[in-house]
Image (cartoon, rainbow, N blue to C red):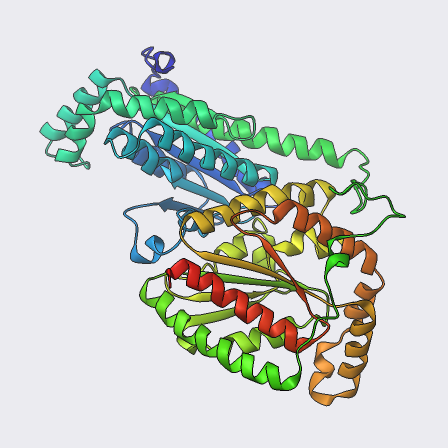
Length: 502
């Protein structure tokens, strides 16, 4: 693979000086045009040690306007990062729409280095690269432009460059034992890099292999490539805007259970909504399970197990009351409740999962979600806020997200709080009468009620596609609030006991 980047290509000083002014002007024009679009841009600069990754990053910062761009370098994992799934540190640094993020090595640094050092075997490397490919594909499908550079030096050129830096008292780059160690491991690094490029060189995020022995050739090639890629996307946007598009509706695809409009029976119809608890039994059970949850929450804190509890359900289904019974049992220092509303401007400028990655709990704490990332396949689907393509691919994106959480060692539980249509109507009317409940009922609640069957089909598809072995859905019978609250508290406690081995 790397023979194509060892051809001795070079650019003279005169040619370089001649080409740079026009290149810089065009890059700035393209950057300004980009700022008006829906595209975030990731420029990932990786490569052989000594190939000038830092110089290329500096050059891009020099040629582009610093407004609307950032440079990201991932050093050693912080304590905060160790307590969360690996990709948390990458998600929180992603650029917004119309912005450029220059990533120094990015998510390729760790797997390539760890394989070269013998900390990963080939199978483990391939698994990590598959995760990266899924991550990049997900971003690309959300309109992110990903430009990846591998700056290559041959072994001999790498040695030559390090020796020159080592013997030059005026060099800005110091040479360390680590640099020479990487020279010794050149073959291992090259093998890992070739695997990384082959696994993740996709149509959505291709690699650009750049010969780096000549600095001027290297920098010009990177600059021109960035310009060409951005121009391609902007030209494609212009072409789309000049044609008439029919926006797909939220109901065009057949759901997984192969319903027809006349056959709307769903998994929700299987829930026994007659189940109930009398008040005396409820009070006894509430005391028992809240006490147990208090103990288990502290035990999870001691063992640094993080917990995510997701609540979805029909309007007035009892999410808020159940969440309060949970949090009453726990020390306030151990949990946070995230109530998910319409996304802010900042959140809309990122992939829809971005705002949920930001709230992943630290080790030993709880995050309780009052509505969650499932909004993409529920309200956004039914109300047409997401296209069919967007909500259809969200099932896989959500499953990958949840798999990362569970593999990291987090507890993840998902509850659908369900009531029937008559019970919902009674609760709506009750809310309108009681002063301290009036804020809970809105015009939107009444509008959603008119789409009861459409939401039922969306929930059926959600359960069918995202109730996995590692993150199953629990469907809660909610007509009787007492029964629903105890069912949830008991389920959380049993799951914690299993995680803790108690």
